[in-house]
Amino acid sequence: MTQKEMMLSGMLYDSHDDELRKDAARSRQLTRLFNNSTEEQKEYRVQLLKQLFGSTGEKIHIEPPFRCDYGCNIYIGERFYANFDCIILDVAEVHIGNNCLFGPRVCIYTPNHPIDADIRNLAIELGKPVHIGDNVWIGGSTVINPGVTIGNNVVIGSGSVVTKDIPDNVIAAGNPCKIIRKITDEDKKYWQSEFEKYQNIVNQGGNLQ
Image (cartoon, rainbow, N blue to C red; front, side, top):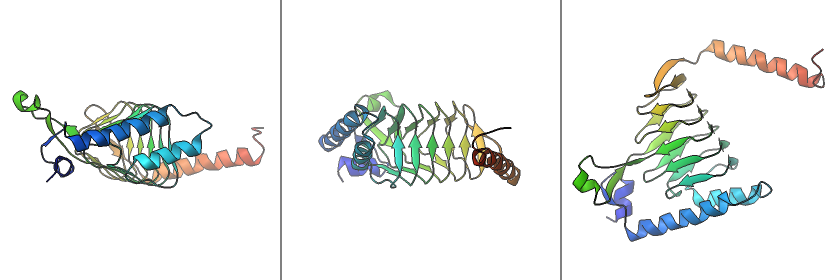
């Protein structure tokens, strides 16, 4: 097996491997071009992201600056948005579903390091994949640790450190991140009602009278 194959399979690998260095250099080039682009270059930004990532949906929007290790191990669904300062360290695969929204400074970490210092000092490490479902909103300054799976229809509160799996249809927050409550039909009714008020105002030309 190559070091890259070992890395992606979750085994120990040498992070100084030549093939991985080339992949990382490609990522640095594409993210540099992306981060130095202007707001008038929307189509160019999307082209760069599609080159960088393993796959994406048609609609993707990331606010610069953005950083990642390799990019090619990141798989993103349709209608993805990430605010400023997103970091995804993808030594293992990162899968993000449809309709996902990241606040500023959301960080996803897949790398892990040996606890034994002698092995760690050899630049030998490993990674664990991260999976995020559909319709997930992750609040700003959240950290998602290696090996975590976040289910569908989840809201993660800002400043959270997600160390364990989060199931579908819940609000969770904290350090470590814990479930606060389930998302219920009452939530849906409330927000549908609020949206109807919004639509009425828009239909009246924004006149609140």
